[in-house]
Image 1 (cartoon, rainbow, N blue to C red):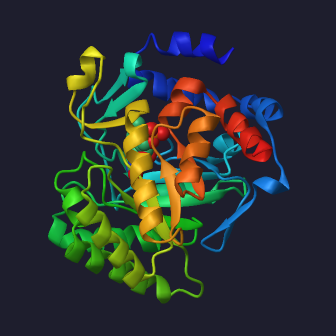
Image 2: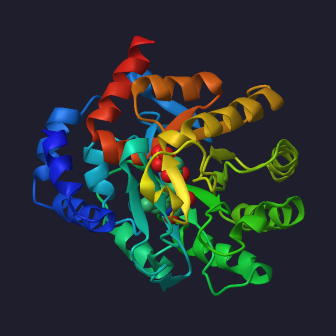
Length: 334
Ligand SMILES: Cc1cc2nc3c(=O)[nH]c(=O)nc-3n(C[C@H](O)[C@H](O)[C@H](O)COP(=O)(O)O)c2cc1C
């Protein structure tokens, strides 16, 4: 059934299909009906990471529900946690369209959305309306017009505005579509950013876990620096990885489009980074894996490499919600 729906959706430009799908999720009772089909809850699936109890280790990656408007619907589809955003202090349009491309032959997506979102105040208001108790992560970034020198302030604004409405935070310094954002992954600016946000966190009655989301295009030296910074700042963990700028071995003609590549072509690279980080930290760092998960086998491979939780985006677009239940069943079997 999903493949018939996907066939029709794939006749539309990628962003149009994306918007139609999200609108459809709001059809009354549709996701409640889908919940009957896709629901699969078992106590063996519960994970405690960063002091939070995740109903299952399979989450929705950032970028699909940018404004936190579909949390109840995605929870109905079976996700154990949902990451909203990336959210910036002020709303912004993002890059001109077209900015989202399917690479069908490669089972990938290239996007250069550019943090299109409604701004943190509006997102905070939508979060107030959610009914589901599913764990929600707030992925935060800086506005395009904010210079890197002033970036910390943007992260603090969003951190404070979302604090009461999300369960964990993600500091996103790894999107390739905001000019120079990835420079914030360098040791000194990263340390300053994480220290400042963590210090703001410590002023709250109860601190919330903060994760750092990294790019897959980093050298081992840069990864070693990150481990040092994460240990020093006592950040809860790391999300591995965002999209890649690399374009190796692709067959699709539109693979020349600029932006970040996700999906199957990203799987190997992001899994290798998990393996590296896990071995360097003796498996002690909490790692959330994301990048090219298209099957239960892929998810298990990420967990074997050292991840505690996994997230999906492109695999969800290509394989549909059945993928979530398949991964859960495979985890139980294991
Ligand atoms: C259209 C699109 C938009 C995205 N937007 C964001 C974003 O706003 N913030 C973010 O941290 N990651 C974003 N991502 C990256 C995903 O969260 C994920 O890290 C990446 O796609 C790799 O996972 P996948 O191969 O399962 O898609 C986006 C990905 C796609 C395809």
